[in-house]
Length: 382
Image (cartoon, rainbow, N blue to C red):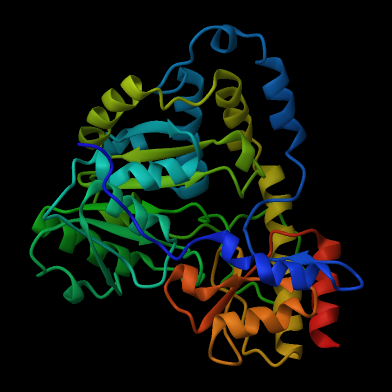
């Protein structure tokens, strides 16, 4: 059986007309739509990549499950950054070629198909639904934290969690996560938690001028207070794309129930889903260099605060998100496409909320340079 057909409004070419308008602005276009990092890759990562460029894991075939050094560093990162002891949980790890391939293939690799139901947030990253469609399964969009909205639905086999959320920034607390885990386990469903923005938790930090190296992390699906000391039925996704500006390196991971990861690894070996050897070495450095992560985190916090001020000055009801890298704001006109065109006349491009499930909203990304974000805020406030 091949991939089933899919359909989605998530098509960046739909912004082409607005980009033409924005490009005609006298001071040029400012793109706050796609969340692609613009800042430099940490020196430690670049050096690790260079050092590994002629290593055995580069001129020979790399290891699908990751080098011993990489797996060990993932375990240490979870302990230090998330307060999670993977070894105590008996959890396994698999490095992936970025988080998007892990998301899009997840339902297929779990063996889901016709008649199976995958629960996902109503407003969310569109690739969750695309991956479900590719597997031939059905999507149920719900308030995932409201377990009564899905736990009695026949056929539920998988539940997507995304905290902090792309695009809303919502953060689920440990109590909410534990309720999801318990409900899913009762019906035999797997919980897959996308935690790619976990180190970008802004709660209580709005307006702060601190540049401390402290990293606030959101609760993890594998935390003891959430999982009850067992990784059974749980998978956690994480990526270095945003924390270390490594989107082009395609370095991410899945951690959790080894009974689920084992069959996935077998398939991945056969289809060549392997991170290159030099990028595995770079991933080790990225997970180790938390000082660089703290610097990048502070950049994003400042940019988000600047965007919120600019959007408020333009009449938007904008607030600092609880987490992640985006301001999720209601369109003043009530329609994302109308507001998108209005902003394009200011030379500013944002994402239409329709891409994520709500056409009444806009997503404004902080993944632009300090200068671009400051310029956008000035235009919004003019």
